[in-house]
Image (cartoon, rainbow, N blue to C red; front, side):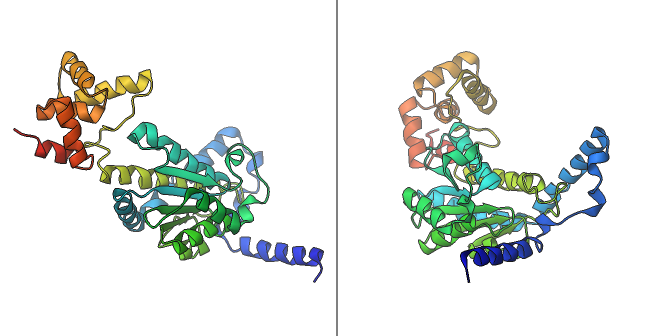
Length: 315
């Protein structure tokens, strides 16, 4: 077979595969959408978006099981690595980038790789998503180990980069999660934990940055946030590990200490001064009636869990 014939055959096979995917389905009832008034289109989009949380709700048991496995590995020092191409890859990198300021994690603890590298965050890198080998190379550059968790993200569930990342990570002994928006996807089948959020055909045929992207964002929110709750990064619903790196976050830190302790402004300032500005340590100083160094020690001895450290404080 000539190269041209081979390419044509591959194209036909891919076309036939895409036609079987729910996320790629054509909706004839929307064929005149471009003729509608703007408000009507907005109402249609809003109605479509409202169906996404219900689709996520159907998969909560699978999501919870994946989170428990992920948190167990991270508690032993493992990392969370997102891998995807295009919109899914960008969503993974976005979620990872929010963890250091929100939960005071090391930037390497939660990270994301995207097909085509950093350039692909703002522009399309042609062909990158089609390479399983590129995914393996990107994961090898991170030195993925058996303690790590790799989450492959793909709306179609067939993107070679995402599937390749999961397959390679699993071969290395890492925990793997496959997040897609089609049932019976190769990505879910390749992973230890498959999560398939079936949101149905898009308003614009095949534009999976819409409902599929929203569904992926909701699940990634759960993966990172609930994992951090399990790791003791919160106290109740307060972000006690917040990194106070700017004026807004410094103000938030003080508010968090106030909400957790009910202490006066003067007491809060003194506690923060005694703990080098660490929110969680300051709360322990105030609620546990200990000094700064003792608060730091108690938190270290209890793996950063504030409730456990409070229980261990002398009373």
